[in-house]
Length: 276
Image (cartoon, rainbow, N blue to C red; front, side, top):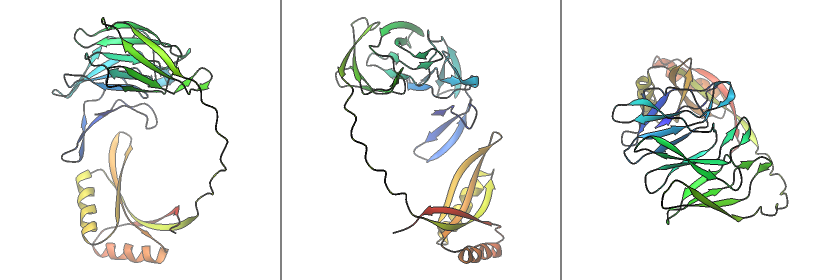
């Protein structure tokens, strides 16, 4: 499940990837546009989406849940604090602990615990240091390791280990690493040498199946074909192009060959890393 994000502007749309068929398909859109949120799979297969940033660059406290069997979203009780760039991790007992994040008042210090059995949130204490854009990793013993991120004064080099009490409503945290000495600056690498290459661009297709069929046919003819997705005004397209060619004359010859097959294309230039 992929949901929300920016394109630019915040999105409500959601898509499902099928790893067996290697295909994407749209599912019902979220109830609220958001980016920089957290999406956490629950034990019953549902997905909990928490917080993030909405329109107007406002941090959110809202929560919604994706129901995979129905392909729909339902609302849930909001968190106590607005958060973006936070973490939301399922712990061994099936609950979800939310840590840190950013808000209009700055980095968030508090933690919250979500219980999917009754859909309630419980305060879960505070972190030793407020942080956002950090990582959260479950440890084999059931502890939760928080690493790095940013705080009120910039990037953090600290890490915290959370352990959960028997009631699972409170957490304790221990900071076990201090900021490391800043290493000596390394000289900047030499910029890569670039060269001009040419592609025959065949356009953008709203008919995704047609774009894939065309790409497969051109690949079968021994061409190198690049296919990539784009979105405009809420519509998904696929763009197909053939190349790259080292000279515009080679690109023109390929374009003329494609024209004989009633495939129209235009030549576009691109700067690419020069092959060694």
